[in-house]
Length: 498
Image (cartoon, rainbow, N blue to C red; front, side, top):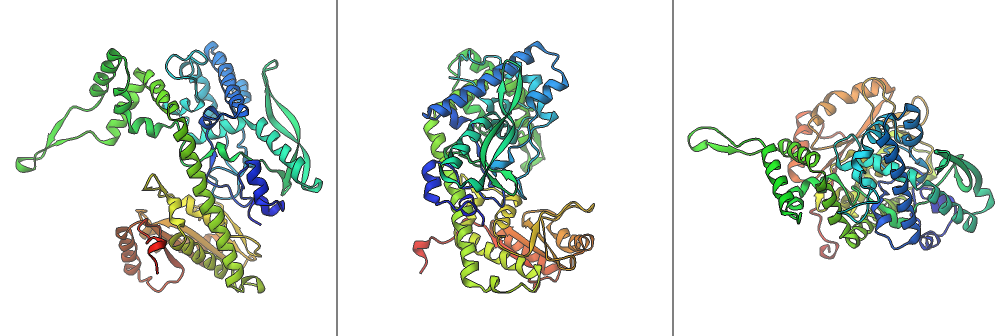
């Protein structure tokens, strides 16, 4: 049983009609709530949630403006555990995350009165947005925004899930749960606990999330877009004087042109990406209005935001649900795996690696690793996809703890004397040779494992040839425990395959 509908014996059409995303109960899926989708929705409940977020930000802003916020208040108002019960996010193993701690609280409390100084009185953008906090270099990233958003709308998610549970689940599938920090009481200035009837899985409650609030990779309002189109955004500012001041300041922040080399090799040295990023940050600090104009531009593209988010969620559904389901069915239909006990944890782990390879190479699974046509080279995505292939098995598959020599990705075990290590690497990893040559034996000795599997993913022929060359140099050409996975986007179209 991999998904919510499997475990709770619910027809997928029922969940889809309700509007909820069918989460995996094995591992987090790489999706998160984008607060911009609350703002951009015509759903009155979502608009109410957007306003409630702004109300809380206004409360924090007023407290920050007065200064002298105690550590106790920071802990009470800013510190939250990750809402792991929604089974969304970027956790490689299971559904645990770090949440929002002291570092986040101090950064936000120190800058609230600056970043949100015009909340409810905006003169450029239509409204304020929580994501604005991640556009300044204050130590707040997109993961923080995601966790903060989920906590601030947790009351809605709890009510949304409770309603589903009461309509469609059996009494024995639910339990009345007391949930901490369910809602904020402005009179006592404190987060409060409340009881809800919720689905129960492995002695913890489960939260459902509306599908139309989810996205993947980036919030609609994000620092990469701001910095990537910085000059274009600045040039779109209608105030001539402000636009000229910004342009002149930005140019002054860039290093002066210098020439390197001699004779025919003499050339002008252009600013590095690091130089440009630094100049952009300095200019934003000097002219924070730039951020408001960027947000205004994003607000004008609300329909596009919803369309892009929907496309990303469909992508995750296709890869992590449809294709993984096909993979599971293939295992059930095409092998006798469940009719006998596997010879070893190594054997089972290797079988699943090869099925994963087939999904990526032959069933469009490679698309998971691309965004806007460009490859997203993350070992973590491959790890999550592999984790989802483990189901109904006597073999334990877990994230290996750090043994002092560095953690491996997973350890498959069937008793103390039957262990196999599984590692996922990118062919572009500069340390791939060292890993293949030395680290495997070190990890095996530290974990009392006899065998290891290395899955290496490449994105183009240059990477492919590089890793093949390393394998040949190390004399590992016949090592069946090394599996190469082609994630290149040059796969033939199904219509062209005969």
